[in-house]
Image (tube, helix red, strand yellow):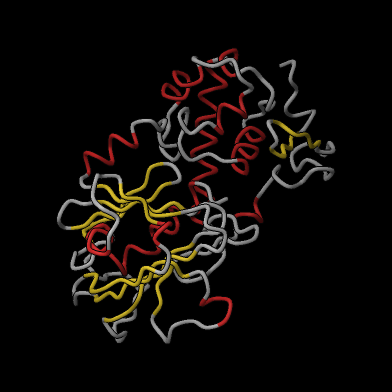
Length: 299
């Protein structure tokens, strides 16, 4: 499932195209992927308003694994990718075959002449294009909010954003739980944006065993862990995220962060730091990899 780096890279790759663009129309093939958070009826008109038809996109935002698109009216649309979701820019003919399937929402868009300052959109490209939300397994979706205030209330249940978390914030969040540290990191109400991949990577980098009790870890080690979370998520974002199977950015490109993984998926291979064989185990049903030497539970 895409984690914070994948969503942040997607947001950055979309921004040069969609910010300043006007949504001219929408084709909604499957209403179930769209959640309306107000008491509006689930009719065609309500869905068109919620999906921004006639609106100009003024900015994008992200908290944890959720990306938000802000419209000029103040309405917000949150994108959650789930396991197989993607949102892509389409400039040519509509895709056919497998790539053309499961496109649940397709917007017709028009860029203003001044909306793009990035090389992602060629200067000679037609101003008319499409934005498509595709999700074969339908674990993701789109959620519409009437205002930024309504979105902020929804996001208030999430912990601090992992890309920017500091030691004090992480220490405060971990002080309230005696769960294993990896379980705590995967709880989005503790810290927003860390999933299975980057929990393993951050704990390995900070030399903390995944079973260490969260509120028993020393302040200095929590501060170090916060720094590693920021570093690893930042590096992964710059690498386009980790593509293990389905994730693609706004132009269908996979991420390459998997090439830098030191722990995740390396069960049975030597630790890149000390050479000890990495061990795998299951923690709350999630595959977990650690180094028994670098991440000694007794330290």
